[in-house]
Image (tube, one colour):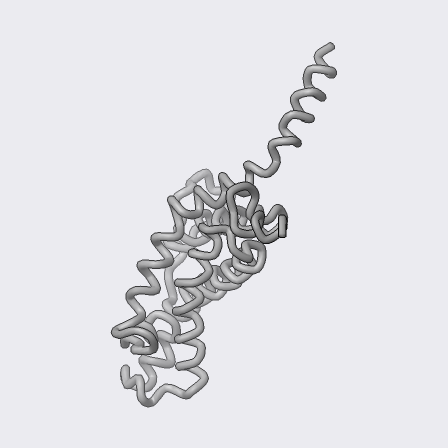
Length: 174
């Protein structure tokens, strides 16, 4: 009797599976999209390629310091990475929110978060207080705890797609 109720409940939940990615995208929109879009905005002085000095300082802190904060002394590949990273920080969150190429956008955001984390730890040399550690019963660590949750949120989209109410869903119906 209890097992039958449980199995019927699970069957009902399985039929609602498209709502999980939709909820994930809504949480991403409410919690992270604004953060990434604001961060991207700090990297541009003018559209489309007017990079601010802050872009180099954020993405290549040690290299930028080594050239005494002279952007013209940075290599071409530095500029390409900074431009690409800045536009990824605009395009990928928007793609996730509207559900366009969601799996690819979520994979891109995972890569972005991993590079962002590495830059924070090794480039900006943030301390252990900011990095934090897992299993310490304190969920407030800006890097270890919060970014792990960001990655899990993005992995839902990688494995489940955009879900209901998405451009991906419309494209799949064509």
